[in-house]
Length: 295
Ligand SMILES: NC(=O)C1=CN([C@@H]2O[C@H](COP(=O)(O)OP(=O)(O)OC[C@H]3O[C@@H](n4cnc5c(N)ncnc54)[C@H](OP(=O)(O)O)[C@@H]3O)[C@@H](O)[C@H]2O)C=CC1
Ligand SMILES: Cc1cn([C@H]2C[C@H](O)[C@@H](COP(=O)(O)OP(=O)(O)O[C@H]3O[C@@H](C)C(=O)[C@@H](O)[C@H]3O)O2)c(=O)[nH]c1=O
Ligand SMILES: [Mg+2]
Image (cartoon, rainbow, N blue to C red; front, top):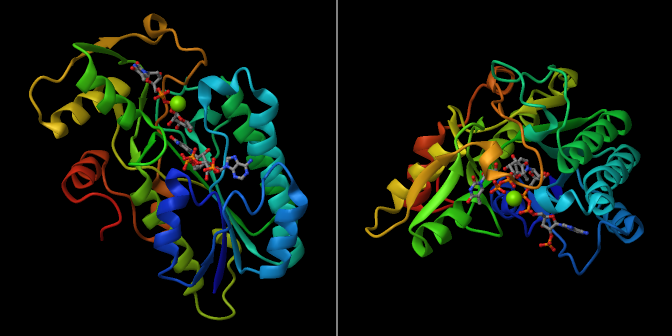
């Protein structure tokens, strides 16, 4: 089995490259080999490789920056997935794509299910929603995993920002009124690989139709960004770290609006694939105890 992985240098892509190798050959060209903004070289590379699966872990993930770089966000998060979906259909490949809690407006009282109405509050969320729609429209055999609050040792993420601020400052102000589930890139890659494996091992001739579609996929449980920051501080366990002060979304006043409720129900994924993600606290514990890429 052959996987063509786009975005292998990102948080999720990096972990996927290692996890997917368990199931088959992973072709993961570097950014130098192609740019998602130029669809032709990428299409040629994919046609030449003829992968069984195309995995898209690339995206424009700067949430605040997207507010002023809307064209770039839509090019990478909506146009590029559309090209990949058309191509996947053309060569008969199966397509895996990732989306976000930020497709929702956050006004729900309970955890979002896959069929709840969307309503992005920011450009990043709107561009990701358009990417989802393109994939559904152009490639029937797809898996879209909506995840949230990803952290890893790579690139930029809230955990790395907190580690830096906690060591450098006396006080760090963090919003306490946005609720969601921190999710380790490693756990997400393990679960994605497990889902693919579950499909691949279905008896020959099985109808796979029921598997295709959109799934929430996050660590289980919930906290606020403030709760996450406190947990990070506790896990670091050094003395002399900054205090974590709770502030409201209004007080923090970020550039982009973000949903108050980012909770995603994982019930559909757990039911369809027969396993689930760890809770966010034990995932964070394992991240600090064991590092990434174990187990
Ligand atoms: N980060 C998060 O908290 C969350 C992320 N997601 C989604 O999960 C997926 C993975 O996110 P994450 O791992 O954090 O992303 P990262 O920002 O860590 O990585 C982005 C990847 O996209 C690649 N990329 C960006 N622009 C281009 C381009 N023009 N051509 C080719 N490749 C490009 C980057 O390559 P390069 O190294 O060359 O820049 C990198 O490999 C995305 O779909 C994201 O929307 C969903 C919810 C939460
Ligand atoms: C750095 C920082 C952020 N915050 C707030 C701002 C915001 O409401 C929240 C998170 O801020 P960040 O900018 O770190 O994270 P953000 O870029 O909003 O993270 C999002 O990224 C995209 C890609 C996703 O898909 C989402 O699931 C989510 O992970 O925490 C503080 O309150 N204090 C701080 O010191
Ligand atoms: Mg950010």
